[in-house]
Image (cartoon, rainbow, N blue to C red; front, top):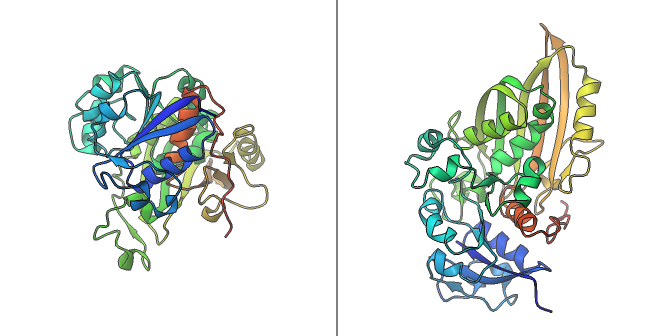
Length: 352
């Protein structure tokens, strides 16, 4: 039976592209019709993604994004930061809906984009005019449904935002927030570098871009929209010996009049009805529980009151390639196509 919609993946040879392809091949309503790439041109998809051996007859096509988008209902754009923005004007002329996985359209401030991505934005008007909706369904579900263009969140950003969203929505998130985020190696992409090569990654923990990571303005922007005030985010990312997964530990401060029971109740109730966010009842979040899935886990531990303030430790775990990347993009794709957002995303993964 023919599927209702046709989709193209542009930039399909990387880890995120492979996850997009896998989820689309499983999708009951969306046909994966084309995969464009600058690598493996003319070769089967299994040349880059061996898990897809025998699963599809599609090959990587070396065509321009606007050519790949012709005749498509939706395009999932997996191009690098600063490349995606240069291709977007021509792509938007094709009429397809677009979910962009790069960071090029997440921010609304062109100056912040220049500071954190190191370049002037080539179509900065689209940052300020509301063309792109920020694709965090737990915050912007109805806006995503009504949009044609979605800027899918970053992996660290998704994880940290979900950890702090209950406090922000309750008006309790303000001032200094300290975050340590631990990430797996797949977040660095398919091409190895001196810092991501297995021999130095597998037995090591190291920080990079401390207090200067490009997801900082994205996180602040999102949490302010959710109800935070005067936010000062201090974020230290840590490279860990994992292939997949992000674990975020966030330290926020609330008035001591907010009791631990109230904070626990806030987190218990915050994600009721959300299909992909879990608040475990008898444990705190852990990476192995979400690895390979589109689920996120969120938890909280209030501390003792001191000097009029109470520290609150907030935790979240995601798979950086799925809920932190391709899976969340598919979730937004489902929403903009008017489909059940859970389609092709409900598998629970394995354990351990």
